[in-house]
Image 1 (cartoon, helix red, strand yellow):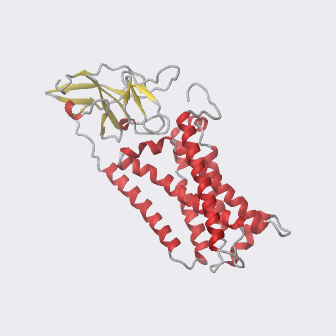
Image 2: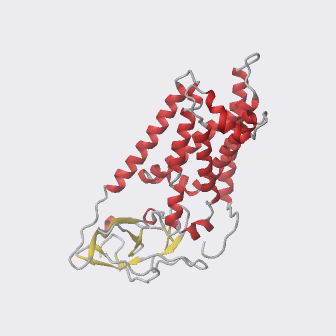
Image 3: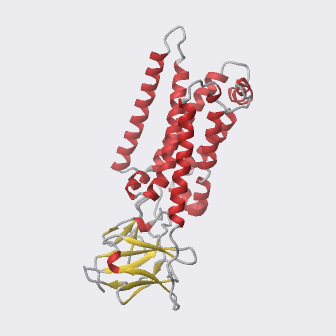
Length: 350
């Protein structure tokens, strides 16, 4: 992102990902409408626009749960990391599903009167529910947040808002999720006679809550490493650092350090990717560079710089050994500072 911006920059993997996601979405909508037509024959048939609107609503709800589950699942099990790579693509697709759902609802329920369709829908239709609460307002609020997130998903905004503020902005997804749940609870559930839908909503809410709590507990359970009097922090035996991977330790100041073993050399860098705060310590070493597991950003282990033509830099840390144990200096070097590292034997001995 330090070189140039392109509106769309898809590689083959992203194209296949988007085609599969879009194809699955289309199949789901067609199947939902077809089943709806078969289950509601004349004279009690349901209008096709309503079936499409319902299909889009159900699809959006499922997509939102999948998107929100990817993060904690990845924290709990690294095998879910591939799902994280293109989560933004899934988020943008989800927004367009929501937008089409809202467009059909506004046109079908508010487009046949004398008032503006949007005003008619937001101002009057909700009073027909059992609670009298205009549930459409919850959905409209969530859609506004999703629009803000989708429109700022490009790296241009990540760079200019800074990763910290960009991440804070996109954390509003949890507010939007609460609004979506309220939209469903005060809307369709008011007239739903079957217990299936409210049960699924309850399972979804409790499942996401449990996943996030489990990921948070696991992350907070990593106590800071013990520091020595001279400012060095113990990492552990070199043999416990996997080849081409890292061991992540916490410092007393809250920073995380990724201590990597690349062949015969051990080096340390910050655990935080400057792109979107991804965990560098969960990435692998490829050609001497650490690859962030979130979006593939790379940084040279020796000096913390991105390979040309990119110019991103991250802090590095000095390392030393003592009696077969690796230590990291608690004070970080300036971003882009070269380090010597320590040499070990293939078996892990120093």
